[in-house]
Image (cartoon, rainbow, N blue to C red; front, side):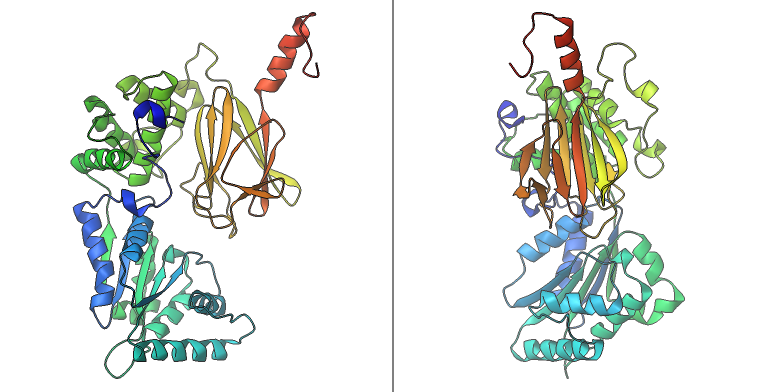
Length: 410
């Protein structure tokens, strides 16, 4: 990749939530303080909302890393569960194996565990990410858990984090009793222009820039214009811009590299997008001349032996995951929010795991990174991705045109 050229020791704009890269804007610092208050207060129940990519999960990971050792934590990220399955998942996080228990036994075990932890001087915390997907019935179970108490304080602290739809649910009349138990609510907004600049420089500094300005001064305003200050979008655009500069053997990102990245991503300005990003018409996003518009390869996504999707690959990055903000969405409980990415260059194609729960497999072997070859099949959850190298037929055709050229078998 481009680390050596830019003199960095790690990738600065990964999509995976890494606490060491957290940039604490005023908004993020306040949200983090609210999370920490669940430990300070005896009745800690906090709700944090924010748009997709605002940095909620990174805040949670940072909070957990700094958490004192006398706290016991259950962290739940898979939220499309029935009430009983949700309670069982909580118990699993606390070290139990409750799958043969009926709901009354699950509740009794959980209640006893919480009381025992309190007696032993430990604070118990439940963190639910992607909480907007919880059904009203599950949220009612959360309310009941929040009511478990000793003579002096609540036995369980709770943090719910989710997209803005979570606020809509909590404001509904059906969940009035739950909402009344929430001590603090905070909505995490995007970064402003100056924070966007500081965010980019911060991540580069953590990655090893040592104060060097890798992005030209005139690129920051454009980055903000196309990302709206949403951290995940900033990461995507900056990483693609670094790849564009790397392809031109430049150790700084100039406006030309940024424009190339925007064309590859097929983005319009943030304010003009419908769903935060909107694809441009390909006729206007790629030059009419040269061969840069031709796909380097393509992937076939299959489930249960049936192809369900096909996607062309051009130079750039394609992120695959469960949520709608990915370039390729696979709506499956076996897929992480950001599961893996395919990085395509003119002469290579690499698939990389993004710290997913279930990983990626090639020939039944779990891999972290893998250079794809024509015909390779990658197992992703319960889906399969087949890679087809579009350059192979063109190379073979060229060989056929030269009567004295050796064949691939030779």
